[in-house]
Length: 389
Ligand code: GDD
Image (cartoon, rainbow, N blue to C red; front, side, top):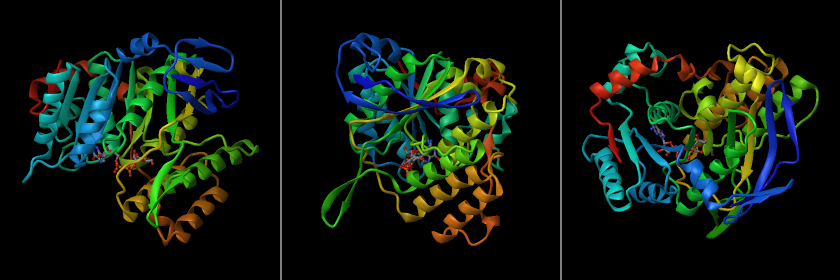
């Protein structure tokens, strides 16, 4: 893979956000130059062997799930966290069968667990990580919740990197590209606390019987605008550096994954940026090593377009509300920014009053969990955990 190196970054305390880098070629030998970097197959494979690719899934079309599984580069450990239905048609069982066959044929390491596994809930209860549990004491629904479970599993396997890919992707080759980008870029990071977030070149949509290659998703354009406004208002210097506010496809070092806070549901990606700024801009963090080493956020534009399942207007509106609410409730948001966010949501007829912009729940970093205890309880009482290889 041949990739541009970023020429420019902006620094906010200990957080460095790099401008978007483009993938120039999917295959390459090793190239080292000040402007571009080519990764050989061996270099990427070395990182794959230390990386887990986490796939959160909830009732997706099985053809799409199957394609995503098959697209993960050899050598990566695949971790599926499923919140799919178990009654009537047992979707979780179908997912397990697909994985079992896939492992039989390819030998790739795959692990799957159900988000509502009683052993999982018990392990969180015993380690007092109650923020992830619902009122009945079971792990809550939500993509962010699934990502935490996946990250803990990756830690159990000793992985040094975690990458996230959605299960509803129509183009398996694009998923393969995403994971290669994760591996290449994270291997270049100059700090143990690094993250890479993807920006797709196009997000195609059918408009009047024709494929139209949109540049921006409906939610991401707006989220980016307000994240940049948050930065601009605090520094007094206008910026457009953030291009990946809603990047569902992203990866990070395990060092960062352990100290980052995940918020619930779909607010998870913009919240990561807000959290890192709140934690590491003014130096008020308990994570002193990350404060001195610095936290790097890379943004990469893919070659492949992103084609995923469209889940309807209501879903998009929910995602916009939760994305903007994390910015609205940020410690750094001033009254002016709050007013602009409220007006945006009102104009889009998503809220009528400010009270409806509720704070999304954030779950504490997983480094707070007594990991040995969590692992013991989870492995002992799990009913759905299956590891192939
Ligand atoms: N484990 C688990 N638990 N997975 C879930 C849950 C859950 O409760 N809810 C959804 N998922 C899975 C879906 O099956 C899919 O694989 C992934 O999480 C993303 O969910 P979608 O419902 O497909 O979201 P989207 O495609 O509209 O939005 C995606 O892109 C946005 C940026 O454009 C997501 O990745 C967003 O987080 C992202 O901001």
